[in-house]
Image 1 (cartoon, rainbow, N blue to C red):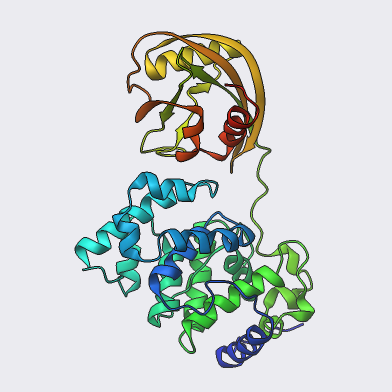
Image 2 (image 1 turned 180 degrees about the vertical axis):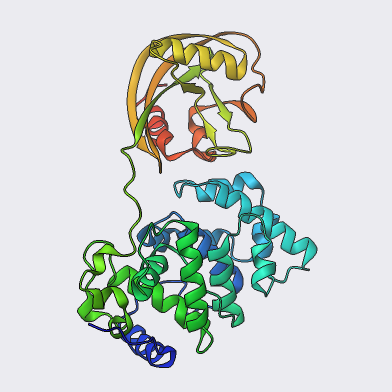
Length: 363
C-alpha cells in the first residue's frame, strides 16, 4: 500500500480534534506559568504520571513560587523530593532557581536556548517549557514522542539512539512550522501514552494513522522500539544501624556527585568479591567514616531496582566502639535520635529501615 505524503495542516487538525476529546486531565495541563510547567516536566522525567499527579500538588504547596524554591535550603528541597528518585533533578532545580533569581531578576527565561542553559535542563524539558509557555515550536521528544515519531515517519532502529532521535527531530521540525507548539507537544505525548503503545498500538483509534508509515506497513509494532536490554545485574550491599550508648544512631550524607547525591543513608557499601557480608559492613563503615564498630545480627534484607541494576541491601545492627567520625567517603555525618530520622531525606530503599527503627522498637 502506498503511503501519502504527510500533510501538516490535515494532520494537525486531526490531532487537535482528537486531543480535545480524549486528553487526560492532569494538574499541569493547560497552565502557562513557566515555573509550574518546569516543575511538572522535571518531575515527569523518570517518574510515572500516576506518581507525579500525586506529588506535584504537594511540591507546589511547599514551594509555590520560583522565589520560594530559591530561598529554601537544599536539604528542604531534597526532603520534599524524597521518594521520587533521580535526586539530581531536585538539586539542579534548586540550583537553577537561584540562578534565575540572580541572573534573570527572578523572571523565568523565555527562549529555548536560555532555558536549555539552566543546570540539569535537557532538550526535552527546555522544548516543553518553551512550547507551553512562550509559544515556541520546538520538537519536545520524550519516550512517547520518539516512538510516535519513529512510526509516523517509518524510521526503523533503536528509538533511544541519538541518530534516530536526530532524524525524528528534523522531521517533526518540518511538521511544526504551523499550528501551536503546545498542541503538537501535548498531542503527540498523549497519542504515545494512550494509543501508540510499544507492543500493541491501537492504530484504528489513532488520529495519525492516515499519515503513519508504520501503520501502512502492516507491522507498526516493529517500529519505535529500543534494543532489548540485557538482564539487570544484582549488587550486594551491606549497611549498619550504628548506635552508641546514648541511643543515637549514626547517619551519613552521600557526596554531591554520583548516585543519590546529598541524600542521607545508613553507612555501608558494596561487597567485594565473595567477602562475608558482616565484614563488608565493618570495612565500608571504617573506610567511609574512620570509626570502629562491632557488627551484630542481620535485621533485614531489602531489594531495590535501579535503571540498570538491582541492589540487595543487607542491614545489620552495629555497636559503635571507637573513633571520631570523619568525612572521608561522605559529605557529612550526624548522630541523631531515632525520632529525628524522618527529618532527613533518605533513598527509598532506606524507608523500611527507618520504619523498623521507629515502628518496631529496634531502638
